[in-house]
Image 1 (cartoon, helix red, strand yellow):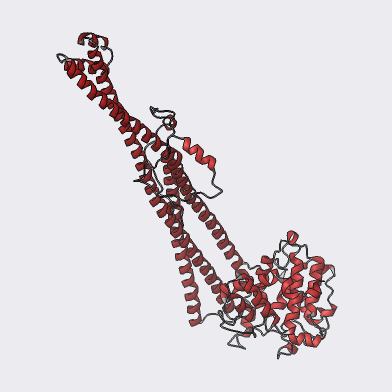
Image 2: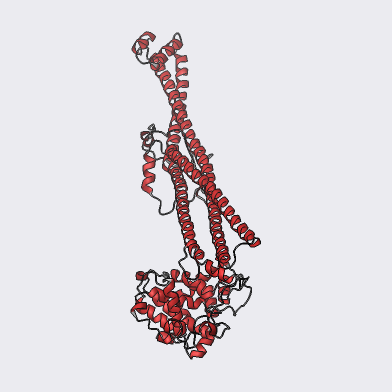
Length: 601
């Protein structure tokens, strides 16, 4: 419920009564009598209002506002200024969204149409067509980022427009309420003044009757009252009226005037009491409540505007960084625009054009595959290493562990130990990639002869990011991801989603998510489970030094979500987010999921 649902916000276009008038009005006849608080504005506001202010409200600001003569119009002007600023921000976001949407749609249309037209024409084939199509895909990805940015801008613009509409509406309601309170107080003060004038007139008339009764002449009375203003005029008129009347008539007239004086005195006393009660009600209760509501209304529109401007800055920064990461990726499994264009081999395309009319990407070297022997036919292997015939990259996990008779793949043990020894305090470990040439060099060495590679050598220990990149590449190259795809159970919300991910996205409760993930981890095949347990223990030790290496659980989850779950199936960004959250949950509860009580002791 919003603030203005609890109170009628109010405004006033005129300054309230001066501060001296607030503390004192006309002294009643019985000053010693205590005044009970009465709701003299019952016709305006008779409902008891709940507490309007949260504990963090600054009461000192409220007191300072109450001491100002024009606090209500001051706050109203401030709200009007804030509303104008908020409206301008909303309009800017709307116009910026239109620009970004038009740019994104145009770029997307251009990339798709260019790719379609090129496929119909007799353009260059070979490496050029691959690079050209990948270039169009990069542009299409950038266009999708801009469209998402435009959507967020539209949402922010609508939210700011809603704030403007509600605040402006409640500003007018608050102004009307404040005006009614002040008008009621002014009417009460005017009625008190009338009662006082009526009492003065009747008192003067009684005084004239008493003077006449004592035998004072009209002339003497008029002379004495020449400088009395209203009093003198009243005496003169009274003298003319009494002239020539007998004592009985004077006595009857005196009794009548005394009765009227008594009535006027009672009315005046009641008017003073009511006005003082109304002033106390207004200045002690209603005005602070109105000012408090207005101040919080101003804070809401100011904070709302600042929040959306901060959000805009973050989104703008994110979209620029996203474009940069699309053009120059930070991971080894994707290629940027420049690297894509550099893959064009004009000489190779020309030489092979007469041999082949269709172009294929060379197949991956897989243990036991048809191309494996041909690719490794050199007498001494690559870099002079003897091929031991036990490749580890792109080989089924269970096959590797059965072949090597190991509970954990040797490459995982070797790389993890080196990383913990030389890179556990390295900033951005696993997030920062190594040089592509060195990564490929180390990968080929490990694939040829794992046991002969010494990761303690300065070549690798001084560049631990290369070892990290190779280990990530090994996980990505697994034919079936470590979080295997073969444990499907129940409806799968994403194409080819692993059972672990399915267990995560089907529930909302965090504790239940942990339990479901724990169950699915226990259902993994033994090779996957033992490898996952060891590797997450390694990551757990990395996070224990997060203050030094800046790799928190969340950061590691972002790095290894797609790596451990795999990207096959086209789940897209939504799938990636769930993958990251699932890895984060498992890593956060590593001890509960993997460590038994007996092991812990």
